[in-house]
Image (cartoon, rainbow, N blue to C red; front, top):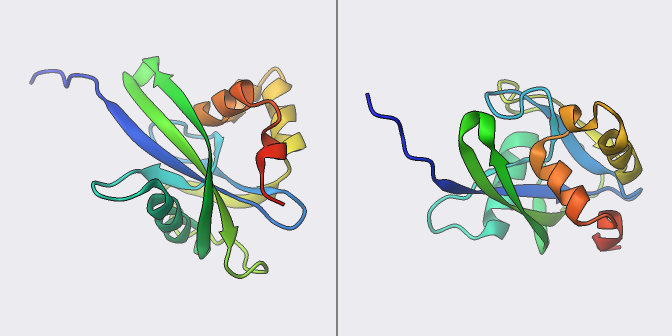
Amino acid sequence: MTAQEPNVRVGVAAVISDREGRVVLGRRKGSIGAGKWGFPGGHLEFGETYFQCAEREALEETGLKVKAVKMMAVTNDVYEEWQRHYITIFVECKREDPDQQPENLEPNKCDEWVWKGWSDIKALQGSPSGTKELFLPIVNLINENPNIDAMMSK
């Protein structure tokens, strides 16, 4: 068996907020990022726009019907341990029904979906275990965009 040559993939993260400015986060399961907090999201499919991907992934993972409204940021995420490299596109999304709550529709991929404020997320980032609890794209997002909460549409 020959080793697969490393390549770069595109990931899309759906950043879904509520009226209080909190965002949907889930504890990941799986080989990359298991046990870490991450946004709903996944791989960009051939021919799909990143807005379509964010909307699709949010619906598949959380049951939330959302409308993608803007691209917020892009991060360069290299996982040396797994020889994986991703470009992650963060897309701000609004719920079509502002009262709809996330459901865990893929329990094999996520423990739960919860609402967390940016201050809570940043506090995790700043704690000694922060980089152990946040998925690498979120770590990079905060490092590169310290005022990320101000980037969200009101």
